[in-house]
Length: 492
Image (cartoon, rainbow, N blue to C red; front, side, top):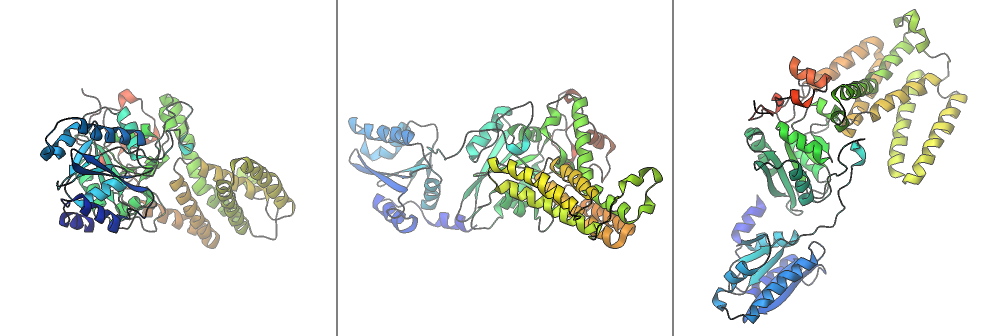
């Protein structure tokens, strides 16, 4: 890439003054208030320490500088000052670089650079301490039982939370920088000997081929480059903010992608059924977990097909048997049923968006206003029939019961598509719409993985694991969809 070419062309100048000139002209030393240099005199030689205020631990840097200055109290060979510094700096992570561009990248990442006059090398000391919050349970993935820690916006904290759960010497975190200007840290996590090497190579190559100024939207930008999503509304990767969920997928043979500044971790490859799972199912007994899973499936099914089917029955009551005639609307209004459904459905979306942008103390009051005033008055004035409010509410609850926000919104788009076809073409439109919907999902792949596996193509044993939450001792084989190098979780 372009940055690699620049790095290869610019070695470290021998003179500290030349390095300072480069930092002033190219990096903004003396202009940017947060970019600084500490100039020292050690054994008669100039030593400069470059840093960025706010990205480092001040106490650790002070200790490093004290350690460097203490060399003046000893009788040492000044011709070997660089080697002495390299040996005497008391810190667990010290490395050397030989190019000025790499030095700048490290300094802007929060590390400090120690430059010794007359030496074409620079010592890089990792004293980073990024601003961030402490790990806490993510709001969108809460469980009654289980860990309360979750990923944060700091990549080092996220890798540590994962390693705490998998203390395997084969767990790998390969880090790279993406973005010509942002130079965002991106880590690929996988277990060597479990994950498919071809899968790891594919993701590694996709990351290297990303050519963009910066990753302001972090993991979402990475996703669009890796899976080439385009205008497809259905999620092709899974996001999680729970370290236990990410660790579980690593042990299955998946690969995770951790992007600095984002509390969400990308899990790939995934199918549509991965987006229907929730950690709560595995925090309960297999029977309870299976029941929770079935209830969730019913909710997802209702969010997709309840309104289109009810609209069909409302427009063509002849499809209903006598025992189910109560399903149709009892009242008639001047507004067509299909228009009522679309208004109510979009109204629920307005409320969801308003709740997100409304401060918490006010969101409760807004919900009461929406539920009591808007809903009740709309029925009384004849804008809606009661059945429309009922079925739209049930479909919306099913949408909220979907664990993945991305899948729930995609299902809502599909529901509107089915409603439109049903309104225009009645029963044939609904049948054609459902067929097109299934074929569309069946034709999707994410990192060479069929999106509807194990339903299409059909694998009975794997599909039984989708329907039933199996006991952990009985789940000895890893999912074949990720092509794990080691198929067995538990040695026989």
